Structure formats: structure tokens, C-alpha cells
Image 1 (cartoon, rainbow, N blue to C red):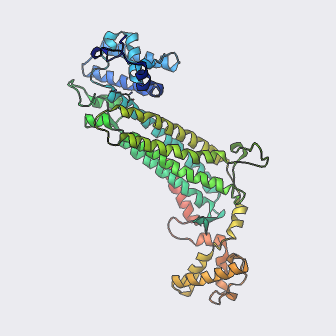
Image 2: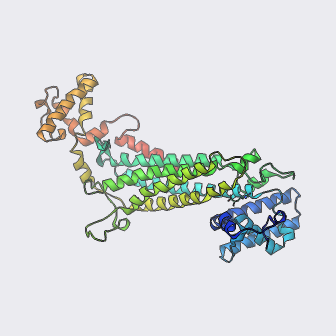
Image 3: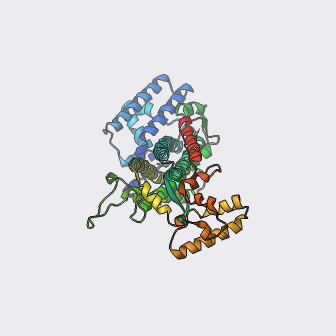
Length: 460
Ligand code: ARG
């Protein structure tokens, strides 16, 4: 029997295979709230523009509220034959208030603008949620940053010892990445502040509608200026997927370092037992599974971005069913980001820092070589390139003797250019606070950085 919504034009009913294959209801029911919000706003606009009567408007509102309540209570029967959430909601509405009135809701709109609206509303909500989770993460990093302004650790380039820094300075690096992630999300939110509702199938409508009205009702600042663009645009989803991909670039780097720095080779930090796992065979093991999983999930998050890029590439205007493929990957990325940021934050709150081991590690790898070269430039008026060479020779000799330059008792015995005043440059805390440039690792500079981030959190 033909019972499809489009059956007027068809002689035959849908094949069962097509019903399954074509339907998005299995996953787009996630959007039921947004779908109903959109319909509420649309019907209010239809009434305000005298396209439906007050009586019809009130019946539609009442019906939609009931549909929402039924879904929330788990009483709603999702039928794959309805194809998607838009049709499922509309069909139930007509069952509740009668097809004569229920059938008027779809005046001056199409599923194409409905799906674009619902999806955009969902993405915007998730955008704000991720911003909040990132703020929480920054707050946790700031707690560590405040506590470890003078906790010395080695910095690395090429994963080789570079110069002494503080743990505070190190961890603030990630806080600034997450600050930019919030700003990136905010910029995406702004770009998505245009309502597609009322674009209709692709060309607008002959009814005298007021799109600004439904846009305002839904919290959009503007309406999409071009109806065809309104229904064809999925940039907002790509923006979100990209923003999440960048967040995971950052969390994966942080997690990689949590894994590395908690290893026996480093022991700079200690993850709490409650966020570690054991081995089924090796009794001594304590594994950083959470950090590894977040690092690993970066793959699917990148994949979801590339998948939607590929779906959208070269699609002719306007709506094509290909675009139904926009949702599952985004739902997955959003869920992955949500869960990962929550557990990462909880784990970081319990992070223990082994200051002693970090300091011990500074005594290897000639971390103070740059400070000695700078000493020669500043106090002995030697050009930096020459100073670099002199200290290079010093390092080479120390290497041969199997010691670190910080262990040298008398620098002048190695090279008379180093007098007594050079000796204080073999101190790590001294080295840290020698740094004067903006953004450096000195206590003063780190305090400024903390203040910047605190101001950012306060203002946003
Ligand atoms: N389920 C569809 C999607 O998710 C909704 C829009 C369908 N529009 C259409 N003309 N078939 O993209």
C-alpha cells in the first residue's frame, strides 16, 4: 500500500530496502528538541504573518508540546517509515490535532530548511557546551600553574634537553592553546548566527513571511541572506568538526606528554590510581589508558572532518541527499569531545607533580649552556656566534669527562674567559629568572600570563 508522504505522484509503494536505506530517523531523532523548537518558531511566524489563524496556531503549539513530552517520556513510537525526525514529528502532530490543522504547519517551509535549522541549532548548543568545558580545563591548568611557578623542569626541542623552565610555564602553554580553541569556537558560532528557516526548498516562498521573526525566536541574530545558500550550507558543521579537530590536536599533545612524563624513564608526573589501569598479566603495571584513548580518539575526530569535506565536495546546489551524511560524524565528534574533555579535566585535577625528579633531570643535557653563552655576550662583550662556539667547546669537554656543565666546580679551569661571576649562571632558578622577554618562563612573566588567562575567563 502506498502511504508515503509523497504518494500522490507515485504509482508504487516504496521498496522495504529503500525505506531502511533512505531513513535517517535512527540517528536524527537526536535532533527532536531542535526540530520542535523550529516548528514552534515557524508556526508563531505563520500566525504573526496571518498565514494561519490564532486557533490553528494554538492547536499546533499544543500538539508540538505534546509530541515533545511523548518523546521525552519515551512513549513516542519511532517508525522508520517516517524517514526522518521532521516527518515523524509532523505525522504525530497531525494524529494529535488532526490533519486539517497539522497539515498547515508545513506552509512556507521545506524539510531542507528544517534540517539545516535543526542541525545548526544543535551545533550551536554544542559549541557553547564545548566552550564551557574548555574553560573548566583552563581553570584546572591554572591551579597547577599557580602552584608551580618555581618548580624547575627541563624544556625540550627535538625531545632533547633545551633550557630550564618552570612547570607553571610549561602547563600554561596548553592553557593558551585551549584559550584559542574557545576563541575559534566563538568565531564559528558567529558565522553560524544566520537562520536558514524559511528558505524553503531552495528558492524562497510566495507567502509574505517574516524570517527575522522565527530567527529571533530561535536565538539567531540574522537570517541567511540567500535562500539557496541557506539550505545548501554545511560550513557550520565543518567549522565545528574543524574546531574539534584542533582541540584534539591540542589534547593529543598534552596526553602524549602525560604518557611520556609519567613513564619510568621520566617520572616527572604521576597520574592518580583512579585514572589508571592495570595489566592482566604484569602485576606491577599502571597504565595511562585515559590519556592514550584521548590521543587515539583524535583519529576518528580527524576522520569525521575529512568525511564531511569529501561528502560536500563538488555537490551541486541546492540540497542533495548526500547531505544526510552530515550528521553521524558530527554527533560522534561532539560526543567524543564532550566525554574526553570531562575526563581529561578530572584526571588533571588529580595530577601529582614530582618536582624532585624534574630538577634531577635538569642536571643532564647541559641545560645551562645558553645562559653561559649569553653571559659571555653580556659581560665579556663577545659576539654571540663566538660565545656559542666557546660554550660548545666547554660542553664537548664536559661530555668527554662524563659530567654535566652544571657540575663544573671551576669554570675558569676550562676556559679563563669564565671568571668567578660566571659561576652563578650554573644555577637553575637563576637561569629561570634571567629571562626578561615578554612571554618568557620567569616567575614575573608567568604571573602575567596567569593574569591574562584569568582575565579571559572572567570576561567570557
Ligand atoms: N533526512 C534529511 C537529512 O537529514 C532531511 C532533509 C530531506 N530533504 C529532502 N528533500 N529529502 O538531510
